[in-house]
Length: 176
Image 1 (cartoon, one colour):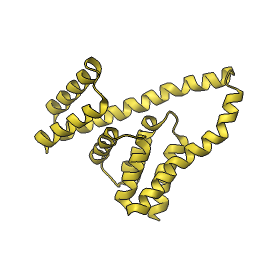
Image 2 (cartoon, rainbow, N blue to C red):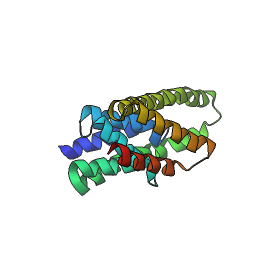
Image 3 (cartoon, helix red, strand yellow):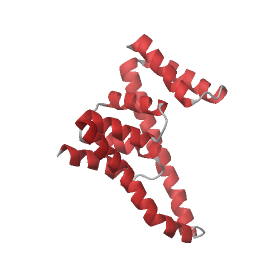
């Protein structure tokens, strides 16, 4: 039963998610934290932060980690398969159709309507992590980490992996 739940927890977000890994993270969080309770919001945020510091697509890293945490190596394999299979199947089915109709106004409008939905989902995920950070680390630490991260990314164009690593070190030293 746990393998079926793992499969569904990663298959459904990946089959209905549009826009790549970052766009489906809120859907995965809803399954992993909300529906099945395999992690709490703090654990999910920490897993996401660690996953962002590592190379490769975020959705497969999240699936592998959660699957392994829930059901060992076979759980990781089921979760990663559930993450990759929908994209592969949909891509193969839709690629020819979208290519044939790429100049269609309907296809162009569809893409324009999906972008704001993804933006709102990402805003919700950001707010969720921000609220969780304030609740667990406090306002001062959360704002300090956010401000330093923003300056490092925008002003100094630091690689996001180094920013995440810096936040992890700060959390380990001052919040651990």
